Image 1: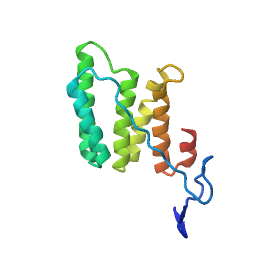
Image 2: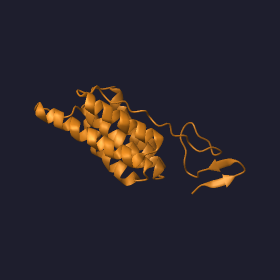
Image 3: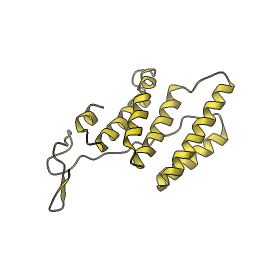
Image 4: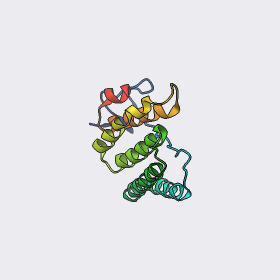
Length: 152
């Protein structure tokens, strides 16, 4: 529960190394960039999805990310392949971010957790492996599970 004191917001129990009792922690949303796509059509849908998400048309963004995900999986299946871990993480983090924006933190959390094994497939130090943990931290924070957010 937030307490308002003068012009400051206090969140009891919410602490991280950069916060104090006087100011709430700040979340900095990661910008998720799509990996190189084998199809111009899918790339265009992804661009529209990102634009929709940034402009607040979240339901439309969710639909477009889903459409692009399905199309990309189809492209891979036609070649007898599966999505690479980076691609799977991109879609999970993008769609999860939209779900968070829509207030569906429970579904976002399930989605992020479902791709943790994909992050483990990446080489040590790969930047995409940190992304899913940042997304987990964000959703835990929204759920007021501050200890879990800190550990994510």
